[in-house]
Structure formats: structure tokens, C-alpha cells
Length: 117
Length: 108
Image 1: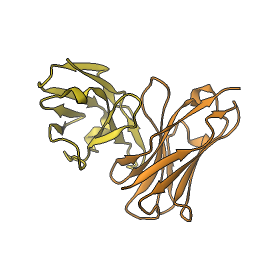
Image 2: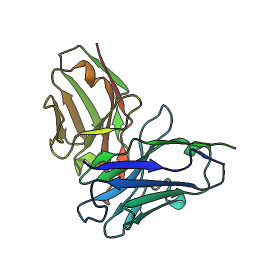
Image 3: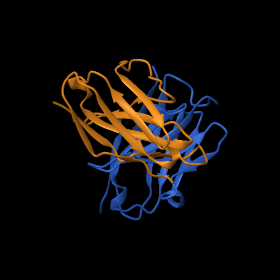
Image 4: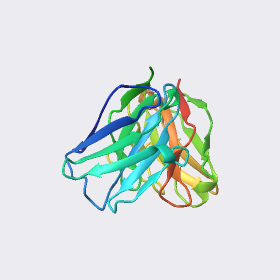
């Protein structure tokens, strides 16, 4: 059974960089069948797609976040990562990692990241 | 356009049928997928493609589409179906996703 687990700091200071890692177990991350994505959800609000990375190495980002976001993959560790730079309080959210086939069929449990000094 | 509009909330009597709609220009090109999210839990994919259910999703969930509107129908709603539901589609590139505004379903 495929499992995804987010990890990273739960508290980030304003203007700093938020960094999260998603560890994939139960299946290879290096498969052309899948893509890997990040989605976030501010407390009490809806879902927001952040970006996705494909086996080819191509990455696609939400236009509203594109200038601040980077997604990368480490196949040796079966992990993929998210970096969001210059964070503000508006970046406070539960961050989910997910596997995509046609759509996001497996999700991590999510991790809350709070931006505060 | 990368906007998907959903009704904020709907209610349904136990055992009855409820339809949740999602409107957006991208739905003329791409099928919507639908996610169920219960409080404190990660979203779960319930419908994808034309009308496909992942393994383990009850057959009371079904999807349909017409023009710029996609629908998720729950036929014979159960208490455990009470949740937030989000539609999802892609922009013209086919690679950038975006979610609908979400619908809270209450089972009475």
C-alpha cells in the first residue's frame, strides 16, 4: 500500500523559506506513470494546488505562487520536496503531498505550517 | 479561466439523493475530479475521468458532465457522506490543476 508522509518545520518566520519533504513508501517515485504534487489548505478554507513535478523533470506551478515555489525530487531517497520563499502569514496552511495519475489518488496526512515571528 | 464555482452548502435527508455541481470554463475541455474531505482528514478522490470510482469508493457516488458544468451525485446518502466536497480541473496547458470553492454536504 502506497503511503506518503510530509515532514518539516511546523513554524517558519516571515520572509524566510518554508521547506517540506514528502517521503513515499510502498512504491517507486521514479515511474513515468505518476506525477507528484503539493496542495495546501489554509485553516478553515479550501484547497489550493501549489504545483506538480513529472517524471520527465518538468514542473508546473500555480501562477499565483510560481515566483516563490520550487518542487524537486530525490529518487535515491524516494522523496520529493517543496520550497516556498519569502513566506508571509498568508502561507499558513496544512500542506499535503500527493501522487497523481490522472488525478491525485494518494495523499499524505498533511502537516500544519504556521508562519509567525 | 481557472475558476471553478460550487454552491457553498447543500443538505440531504438520509437515504435521499443529492447532486453537487461545479461550474467553470475548463470543464468544457477536461473532466472534473471530485474529492471528499472529512474534518481533520486529508482529501480522498471519489470520482475521476468521465465517471470512474477508485477502488473502495461506494457505487452510490457517480459523476457526470454537460457543457461547463460537472456534477457529483450521491444516490442514497449515508451519514458517513457528510463532508466537504471539492471539484478539480486543469487549465489549458493540461498540467496545472485548480480546485473548486468546495461544497459542505450535511446529511439530515
